[in-house]
Every structure is written in structure tokens, then in C-alpha cells.
Image (cartoon, rainbow, N blue to C red; front, side):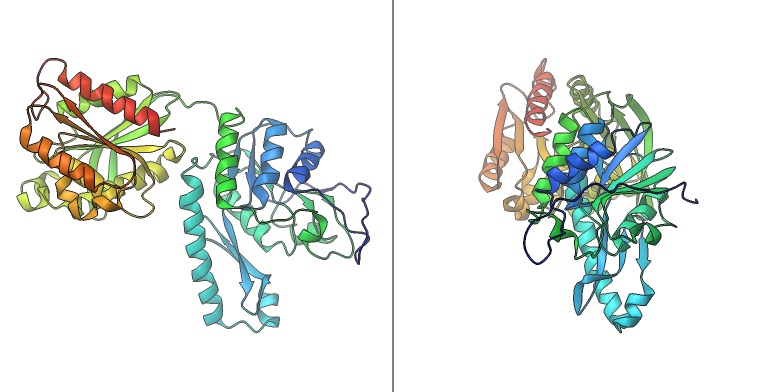
Length: 452
């Protein structure tokens, strides 16, 4: 799409002493964001503010708050020249976006092997950041909307170009790039990438973004996550979605696993159910607990861990590693395909399904906020219990003596926050009057504490 125009706001500069007397000084990124927000105060319409992690997010946070618009991150990584990492020879971004500056690559004599090594490293970091930041909230839908991309400044423009391409691929109908400071020729570098470019200052000479900040300390991952969460709590984010109820198909390698997803309006979390051996998504006990969790404002996903044909093989039924892989596939499907990453995730495992849930929760970066086990077999994940740092509640029937013993032993092996609750007079299936209601209440209490 051809750009509709550019806007360069040249305000009077503040001067400080030193070797660079013309340097523009922002107190810090939050100060720069507030000043940029004043320049953008006239923007309206269906607008999403996108901060470039990490340094652009504090700036974008102030803009989003001032404009009362949703805040999100847009993930890209600069490809630095091996001998001079601060010099960008390109950038990569979500949606497999890749932008290269052939002139820089040629002048720096960067070989294809060197370029490949830099790309591999930056793709790994991009994936790490995606898992870290998308756990705080899902990607805001850009389809048909204006993407206002904000960074703490622009130097070469490679990262900004990649961000614009990513936003366009995500369906944005209009791209606006806004920064506190940029080189005088910044607009000409972006003419094919943005619809509008805004910079508060375009000084000449340009000595790098950091020279225009009094405090240009590194922004941490924790600060980015904190600002994303605060934007949710401050009411600048998306309105609560409509309730959702749908039969779904989860692709897991060569098999398709049927399931049912329900998310009430204003849900505060989502619980994935892991059924026991010989059961399925149609388990009446799991369905009843799921119904009661939805009454507490939690979404639920019940799905089959095995195909009908696979379920006839008892080896599959007790193959904890296979079933945990299926559970991880369902978890990834929920977060990436349905955009439910904004909702904290929990596992509810029944019988052997509890062992599966704990096995999967022990995976590094699993991103699970809480686990509840009903009449579970945590011993099936014995070798991994010490790696489970996710808050875990074990619920067992008082008359289910063997399983009570198994759970008492497992409790001592679990890492992190955990407890054991025994329902008096209940047997393994909690078929006694009121027993399943107690299970649901204990589960809702645990998820309510941790899915926030």
C-alpha cells in the first residue's frame, strides 16, 4: 500500500553541556512516551498501540494510556553485523518476516555462513520473547485496524521496517510509526513501509538514540510483562469477548483430536482437562466439574488424548510421555490458534490424567499457572515431580485409601506451592452425594487463587 503521508514534528530542542551540546534530552522512556502521546493526542479510530520490546514498550505504554487504546508488543529482532553488533544488517520478526540491508552486508563483508549464524541466534531469542510476553496476554487482533508502532527511537530503520511488515501481515489496514527521535532522513528510509511516520525530533548530526535520553538503562523482560499486565488492569485493553462455545479439532502431528471449548464472557483463565484411562472428553464427571468452573468465570477445554483406534491399545493408554505430548499440543493450540494466551492456563487431571498433567507441567517454559488433580495418579510422573514448580492441588476421596497413600507420597516430592485435600467419605470416582461438588469447589478455589 502506498503511504498516505508523513508527519515530522520539529519542536524546540533542549540543550545540555558536553561534547554534544545539541543533544535532545528526554528524562527517560516514560517521559518520552508522555511527550509523544501529546503529539498523538488527535489520533482516533480503531487503533492498537504496539511497542517494540524491550525499550519501546515503556514509551508505548504511556501512549496507549493517554489515548485509551489497547497495548500490545510486536516482536522483531535486529540482525547485527558480527564485528559491529550495533550496526543492523537486517531484522526478523513474527510471521517469518525477514528484512536484509544488502548494502550493509556487502560493505561489512558478511558471509552467508555468518548471516545464518546471526539469524539462528536471533530466531531463538525471538521465540523466547514470544513465550515470555505472550504468556502475559494474547496478540491483539490487528485485522482492519490502524497499527500505531512505537519505539524509543530509530537509528537504521531495519527493525522498524520488519515491525511494519509484521503488522501488515497480521492484517493492519494502516501503519503508523511514531518515535521520540530519529535521523533527519528517517522518513525517506520508510517510504515503502509505513503510511505515516512521526518523530518528535530529527537532529543533525544524529549520534544514536541513547544520546537523547538522560536515563537509557536497559528495559527488562519483567518490566515489559508488568506494563502489559498493567495495561490490562487499567482498562485500556480490549473489551471482554463474547462467550464462546465450539466443537474443535486439535491437530497433533498426524492425528486430529476432537474437543469442546467453552469460554464465558470476561473469563479470567482457561482450564484444560486431562481425562483418565478408559475415558474421553465425554467424561460426565469432568463435564460436571467443567460446568461449575465456567460458573466461576473460567473457560474450559475438554479433548480426547487418543483417537478411537489408538485407545484400543492399552500401551497407549498408559504411555504418559505420548499423552503429555498431546496435552502440550492442545496447550499450544489454545494459545496460538484461538488467541487465548491472554488467559492464564491451568490443567485439571483425573486419575492417570493427573500424571499426564504433571508430566507436561514439568516441561521448561510450560506456562501453566496451576494444576488440580482429582483422584489422581501423580506417581506416574514420579521422575518429574521435583521439576513441577506450578502450584498444584491434589484432591482425593477419603475412602480411596490406596490413592490417598500415593498422593501423600507425591506431595512430598512436588516442588513449589502444593497441598492435599481429602474429601471425607468419597471413593475414587466421587459418586457419593455432594462429593463431586466439593471437588469442583476445591478446584475453583485453587484456580481462582492462581489463574490471575
